[in-house]
Length: 268
Image: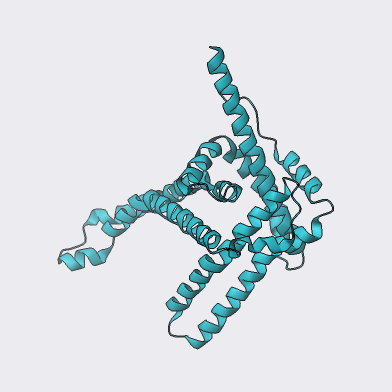
């Protein structure tokens, strides 16, 4: 069925440079706005941590809530901004706050984040379930609770436990990688059902996730630069734009192959 290949990382990065040509300042502002929001949230969490030194769990909860209800809609707005830029739409960087302009849009953005978080957490939990079960069985407190001696064979579970943890993490990452296009698909259509968006992401990622992983590895140099504060003005917009360009190529590639497959079926 699939005969059209997704352009490689070099083509994606070349397209990113062409897309951002003449737009680098607004792209930098749009890309850095989520980072500045994160800094504000981190500062607020730092103040709470000083005031509630004996309630660090509560501080972590407050930080997580700010992340979900404030940072996530801004980040989704940035994804939307860069997606539209790759479609030659000229918008001011303030459009990053698009999901705060309307209550229904805001609720949809939060719902998208919670839905994706739920899908990822349940996938990771399912993949790590064998490791969790073996960890429970090998823990001595269970046998203390039951009032029995720890069986000798429990000592041999350490290797099994390490193996299951490694396999679980790899499988978990493989499963959640299928959802990497979900943010792009959501910002494409404000009326799309979330289950449909996640389904499309799973279907398209079957053919594009390897290309995306290759793109991520090709950006490792930019990642290293991002550890310094100043280069963020250059690297952050490149990350967002690379994701948007790759997503567009992946979706177009999938639709082209689907059309080709349907045409072949019709000719038969």
